[in-house]
Length: 346
Image 1 (cartoon, one colour):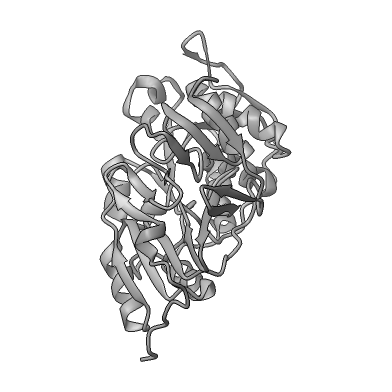
Image 2 (image 1 turned 120 degrees about the vertical axis):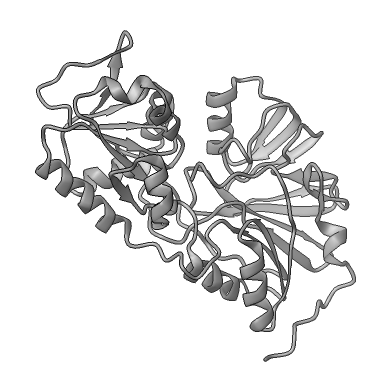
């Protein structure tokens, strides 16, 4: 086992970032990263509701994340907002911060926090697989890497998303008389699934739940071509078409009468959790698609190595297994036990 690396600086990591009930806090810069309750100054990694919340005094995030927050919460979601470009360095009370692509959803970012020769990178949520709907993850060299751990068990190895999409396309051909209702999280997953279907050759109109309309329209303005989309329902009733085909909606829609409006619905769910058969059975999913917007086990461990970090902090997920892997590989590690971040909606 190689000896652990040491910090060649006077500042200690906890002086730069430390966990508090509100979230990760920087004592040196007086700001929070992805706080779970309103604070004076928040840096936000991406637009999912468990990371991006309304009510902060000031928010710093990428332009796309700010736009998504405005779509979801309204224009007055924070006292003031500031957009950060990828790679742009911004000084906050003597602490330099910069945003770098995370590959999770449109506008998602890792946040690098640096002072006195010490750099900590907070990953937020991230994935390494190719995704035509957002900028690809870029490894950032750092002393401390704060990584998510949603799928931090060796059993989680995601198959290529194109292969899973091919299964959906094949089912559409095999059961043309059935409405394939695809459950996909409204921000990121839904647009990715739609784009994957287009790349697989499905050019027919795709019907979408009302919760997806504004976000899909925004993705289009950002250069993500989704093809013809039409509302799934009209005046609360399923639209009458010669072939119902595909309907994409948020997972919550499966739990109410909305999905039962369609002809002979075939339930599809796109999630990394579909690797666990029991979860698919519990949800009544007929066609589980293992399509994830989070890194799997090989990607998590490879990313840690790529950052060159001497220390790893693990948060929101299967923390213990990844901490143990780090220890076995000579990397200092600890779980943060942060609360308020969900993985079920993935």
